[in-house]
Structures are given as structure tokens and as C-alpha cells.
Image (cartoon, rainbow, N blue to C red):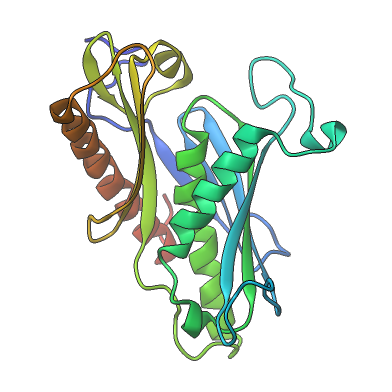
Length: 241
């Protein structure tokens, strides 16, 4: 199958992660996955929500899209006086994914909030938010250690995410918007650096799909996530990518 941008069926879009793009945030990056661009910032507060056990910390996320991140302008959530159901669902996913990488006892009684603001959306904004959000989180944890606030790094693993789908009966990795709009099956996957699954969101949008097809999509995601985590590692080691 010839893809819109000429990629192979198992090929990611070009990925770039630029760290330290916000001078005030404890950790930040801009992640570009093709034409999807997400600004991720990590903010540290020395308090936790009431539901968090004594002596433990918390990691959460917020997600939003700028009004003209898409092909047509959308209203800001604040103008509707409530968060859109889609934004609420995505930020819960990002929060769950990032918490899977953190030892909350080592983090201590503080909260790290990851803000994921979509500057431009061309498919895969939730997965880009997880992948970039992890980099912002890791940079914030590093700063806490450099400042002497933490003695040990609370990160226990790395996490990244990517999508895959079936378009015209062909499994494809990392769908852009045009492919996603035509997908018969859409699947988002979050994994750790050990290859363990944190979350799978799979939907038969045009037809049902088999367990074998699901496995194929997960295998595609595993390949893509491995490549994304290699980029994360380069960025966090100070390399340019």
C-alpha cells in the first residue's frame, strides 16, 4: 500500500523532541511527530491531592488543543465553561501512562502536573502527549535531584506511545489524520522500555477485527515505541534530535 507521505507500513513519521523550551517550567519539551506538534511542560507543586496516601506523591496531566490546531477553528474549553469529553479522556490517559513510570514514595509529598498543549494536530496527539510528556517529566525529576530536593530518581522506567490502524485492510503504524479518518480499526498503545503494556485502546470503527490483527497492530506499536524511546534517551542524555 502506498501511504500519503510515502512511508513504509511499519515506519514512524519524522520525530523531533526539543527539550527546555519553557524557561519557567521544571521540565519541558516540544515534540513534533510529523505535522503533529505538542508542547509539554512539567510543573512541580509541594502538595498533593486529598486522595493521595501520606508520604506519597502524585503525577497528573492536563490536555488541550489550541483553537486553530486543526483544519478549522474550535472553541476553547474555557469558552464552553467545561472540559470537552475528548480532552478529559485524553488527559486521563496521559496521567495514567506517566504514573506507570514513577515510584510515588520516592517522589514524596509533591505533585508534578504535565500540561500537554497541542499546537498543531495531524493525528496521534494523545500518543505524542505521552511520549513528550515523559521527557518533560524526566527533566523535572532531574531538576528536583539537581536542586537537592530528591535524593533518588523516582522514575522506574520510560514510557512512550504510538498509534496503529488498519486502512484498506492493511495494518499501518503511526497514522496521520487522513489515514486515521479512513481507518477501519484504530489502536493506541502505551508501553514501558521493558516492552510491557501500560494501556491499549483499540476500536473497530469500520469493522470488527481479529485477535491476530490486534496482535499485528500491537507488534507494529512495539516497534515504533522502541524507536521513540531511543529518541527519548538521546534527548535526555543531552543529544540533539
